[in-house]
Image 1 (cartoon, rainbow, N blue to C red):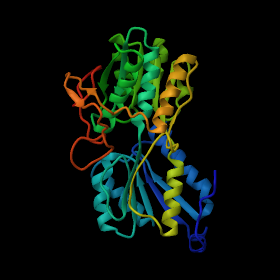
Image 2 (image 1 turned 60 degrees about the vertical axis):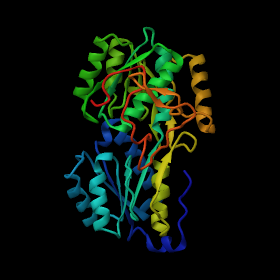
Image 3 (image 1 turned 30 degrees about the vertical axis):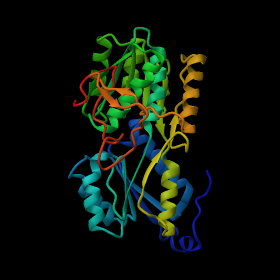
Length: 355
C-alpha cells in the first residue's frame, strides 16, 4: 500500500503525541462478515497507512435515527477531527452536527446532503450487482431466483433492479422473487426469508444483507448464491458464485490525508469498478468458463464507459417505460429521476418495491 502524501506542515503538526483523530460510526458490528466488516477493513488500512499520526476509533451497532446524535456528540467530545458515518439513516443527524460543529469534518456513506464540512461517498454497486445477476442467471435451471432484501429504499431497489437485469441478460425468462427483512443484520430474519424463498421453489439465492446467512441456507439446500459487501465465499463455498464488494480503504486514506493537509473540500464521490472502489469477488467453483468470460467482458464494458445497466430502454415491473431508449439515469439529481431516487422494480422482479 503506498504511503499517503502529507505536507511538511501536516508532518510537523500530526504526530504520535498529537495524532489526527478519525472516527467511524458503524450500523452493525465488524464481525458481520459483510457491510460493516468491509468498513472495518478500511479503518484498519488507515491505521496501517498513517501509523501513530492518526488515531482511529469507532462505535458499532449504532441505531439509525435520532439516537445517533448522542454517539456523534461523544466522538466530538473525544476529539474527533473527522467522522465517517456508514449508513443512509444517519443523514439527518450528520447534517445537524455539521451545522453545529463547523470545525469538525463529516462524511456519510450513501447519502445526498452536502455542506461545507459534510461530504458524501459511495460506489456504483449496481454495476457489480448486474454482474452478480449474470452469474445467478447462468446458474438457475428453472429460471426462479430469490433475493433476500433489507429495506425498500432506492439503494436496495436499484441493487435488485440491476441484479435482475443482469440475470435476464443470461436467461431472458428468469424472475427474481424478493422477500423483505426490514433489517440490515438479523441472521434469524435473514434465514427465515431465505428459507421461504427455497420453499417457493427458487434454485438460486441473492441478497443485500450484511451477513452470509442466505448463503448458508443456499448451501444447505444444494443451491447457488451471490453474496454482497464482502467476499463471503468461505461461509458457503459450494454455493458461492460471486459478489459485489466495496474497497473503502483507499478512499478513507485519501480523504484523511487531505484533511490532515488542510486541503479537504466537500464532495460527492461515487466510485466504481474502474477506480477499484467496487470489486467483484472471486468466482465460485461452479461458475463455468463461458459464464466467467461473459461477465468479464461486460465488466470491461462498464469500466470503459460503454455500458451502464441503467441505460434505456428499461421496462418497469408493470410494463410501462421506466427509462426511455437512449437515456441513462444520472447517479443523483435534486429533482427528477436518478439512481439515488429510483423506487420501482424492473420487469422480471416478483415483489413490492414499497416493502
